[in-house]
Image (cartoon, rainbow, N blue to C red; front, top):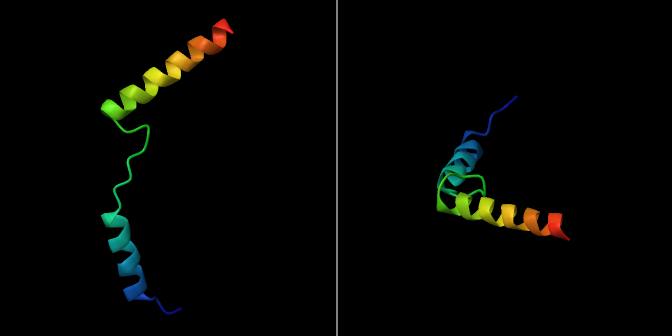
Length: 47
């Protein structure tokens, strides 16, 4: 089976450039996400 090294190198390079921030990542964004989730939970319990 022939490997397509140029294609694989292109995919690896594209993946290395990508820096999508996930909601569960550490930092201020995560803290805000957790706070919002907790406030929504409180609203659901009272309703």
